[in-house]
Image (cartoon, rainbow, N blue to C red; front, side, top):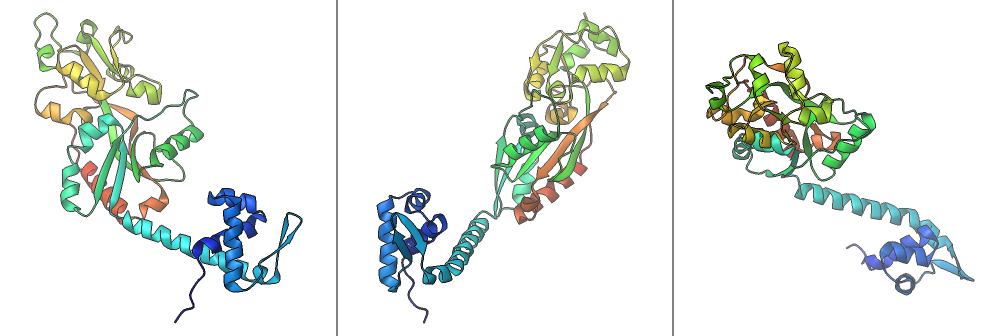
Length: 319
């Protein structure tokens, strides 16, 4: 039978005091009073029948006995900490937190997530829709790293719109993207200003999905009109929206035409609530990427989600 161990709090008080060589600093670390630490150390000495410190004019010195046992005691605390982390990892192994931009979460992920839940009922999925912060100093490795670190601080995986240059992370390209004008079908057949040719945009109210300008420095309208070879369209006019979802709603109400990503308008396009009046799809430099840390990538729930999500993206057919 194993010998009975001393109280854990007494061992912690001794180890912290020996590490700091200060009762006061040990008390601050353990969030107790110095008197409580001194009491615990004295109780441990009484329990063991061994003196652990030489007390000299407010200074402490380890005895030979204390010095001999301290490394093994520290290894024991390290082993306990590792065991607790394994218990926590086991407890959370079936939990998956996904961060994504609101537009992507609402207009793409939510249309498909039920299939993952049906295939993996053991995974507790939590979706966090959040805005990605953009540094006013522009892009750059440091800014991108800070952004991803912030997103993954409380999430297992993040779905990011960007260029995929994220060193130090596990990165999978999810969706290549294009943009095209999208509007209500009634604008196409409007008797006064029918939307038949790209040049007809000169008579239409332009709605702006600001995603492109925020992340790539060029508006979606500028990208598409350049690809279409259309000039004379004033891209400074019209209301701006920070989310594609808001721009879709304005377009569906007939308030104008928005240049944006049709992949996010899938449900509305299938329902003919919105239409794409022109065949041209202008490719974007940015895409959607699935990003996680290398450590998180080894978790079964994360690996299952990544495999499923990439398979879903591979089935994507642009409308």
